[in-house]
Length: 344
Image 1 (cartoon, rainbow, N blue to C red):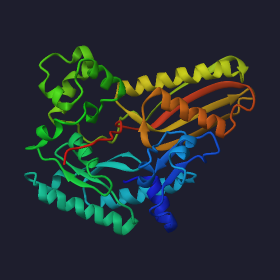
Image 2 (image 1 turned 120 degrees about the vertical axis):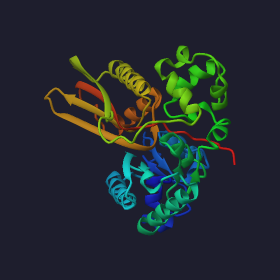
Image 3 (image 1 turned 180 degrees about the vertical axis):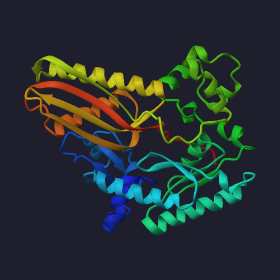
Image 4 (image 1 turned 90 degrees about the vertical axis):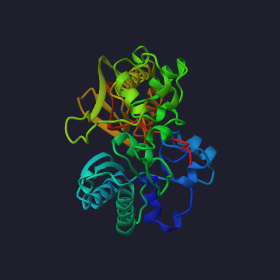
C-alpha cells in the first residue's frame, strides 16, 4: 500500500488530501513520526524521525496521532480483496503481502500478469478508495523490487529475460537481506552495486559468511524462497531485572542502548527489520506495563530502535517511579525497506 497510514487519514478526512500529512507524535512533544504522506516526504520527512525534526523540515505539516486499530481493520479488508484472486497470500506486514499467482500460468506471461495486477489495483481502489503499488516477478525478490518501482500507484513487471540487466545498476542494498551492516561490509571491498556482485569472482564468505551463496543468487535475480505461513520469527526482545529498583538515568539509558544493539544484531542475523517497537516496565509492586508504537517504514538499526523506545518511555511517563524491570522488543518483522532510484 502507498503511504498507508497517511493515505487512510487522507481518505477518511477529504480536507487532508493533497496536504503534507504526518502521522505520529505532535511536534511539541518528544516523539517520532510513524508515517508521512508523499506530500510530506518531498520535504525529507520519514518514519522514525523525531517529530520536532519533521516539523522543522515541513513547517506546514499536519500532525495526526496514529489510529492503529483503524489501520489494522483496513489491512484486513485489503487482504480480503486480495484473497478473491485465489492465490496463496503471505502477509508480511499491515500493508504488504506476497501473492503466489502461479496457478494462473502454464508458462509465465507478463501481459496476463500485468492484467491481473490491474484488476487487483482497481478492486482496492474501488472497494477501499486507496492506491496500491504492485510488483510482478517470477520470485519474491523480483516482485519486491518491482513493487518499489514507480511508487505511488505503481504496477511493474520484471521478466526473467531482463532481470540480470535490470538489477545491475541498483545498489547492493536493494537485495533482500542486505541491511546496513552487510552494505557496509560489501562497500569495504568495493562492492556497492548489484553489478559489482554479479561480476565479483572472489569468495564472498569472508564478507558475509553463510549468506554468500544466497547473495550471489539474488544478485542474478534468482530466489527459490517459497511463501511462508508458519515458523517465521515473529518478534525479538530483551529485558533486564534489576538487583535494586531504580529510576536512575545513568543506569536506564546505557541498558536501553545495550538492549537496542542486541535487538539490532538479532535482526541483522535474521536479515529482518521491524515495524513495531515495544517497551516493557515492571514496578516494585510487580505491576507491569507495556506500550508500543508502529512505524510505516521498517527499522533495523540500534539508533532508530533506541530513539523510538525513548520516545515511548517519555510519552507514556513510564519511569514515574523506580523500575524493577526494563524490557525492549520489536515485532512486525519483515524484509528491510529499500528506497530505490531505478532506471527508467
